Length: 464
Image (tube, rainbow, N blue to C red; front, side, top):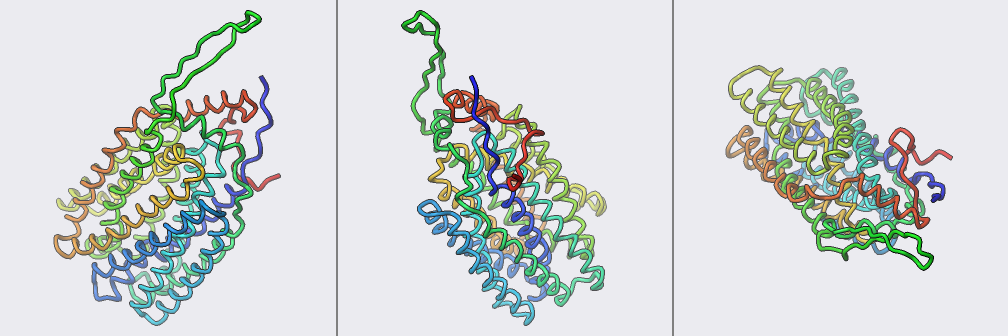
């Protein structure tokens, strides 16, 4: 049996990787920690204001992601991406004017428009990326994308460190404004990369692969030897028909992500406030933390993806999430018992790294069980999860004001544990190794060939 030559990886993959790195570098520079501190200082130390602005961004994102998902499934995904750029440039303009004039109300409008841009671009972009990846490869490619995202996330704080060094290393409204403005400028090259993505570079023969991959995950496959007319032996296989589980898988993962997003949103925007108020850390020290954590995620996400090949994607996700939750509680105990800032920050870094190193695993599994024509709509679910992350920031602000920031962290850890429970029901799903074997069997009909090893494959996509 011979296989046709494997086509070069889609050009969309390498380009989307670079876009991801740049857009997250920009976001981490202006939005990750500096925006929360800027709002906190601008509004006379109001935690509720921090949560409300984040909630507005998330609400706008989910409102725009719904039509984006529908339109990108019905028409072309790259058309939706180009439309998102007009919204993006409008957002940059409004935010720039807002921080120059120190206008909180205009800033609310600007970040809302930015949320609308991200809802449009993320929904169509992630669907197009998934279209560009052949089945059985998604955890590896999405892990690589996650690494680009975290590499970009490092670049933002590194830039902020240099800026705060020259500005004086103090938390002031004017210094934070300067850093936010720099972040807007970094968005522009990312926008142009978004224009280079195209539906014409989607992976081929995927519809044929889906017919194999969307079979019953608990199917009872039997291979029997049958004699043909010449008396020779031939192989035949039978499988059950499509099962409801093929649709339940993405819904279960989305439920887990929804609960996890609600939990994370209640605290993520308040870590900078915790560092500023409770630990009295300088701006540069905070930015160092935001450099170290994504660097660790880049390394650990690759290890998690490799381990998942043996033990399963959901199993490894739950394992690392439980480690992260444990470190969250240890961080709280270290603070309450005054065990020192270095130990508190160590637990924080361990918590952040292990909680965020497995997102590619669950996302890849979700897309494995979603038909190509429905991916835009299922990406909307991810945007809803992101809204829950942003929307719950408003609730987090209220909780910080009412019960204190430490108790808010305890609530977050408890909900994050609850979020892992749905994933326990997916422990029996086929591994990616099994999915690769299915692609090999599909290849016997001339549709594909065995996948290359990790070291042999080039995902850049732009090389001839």
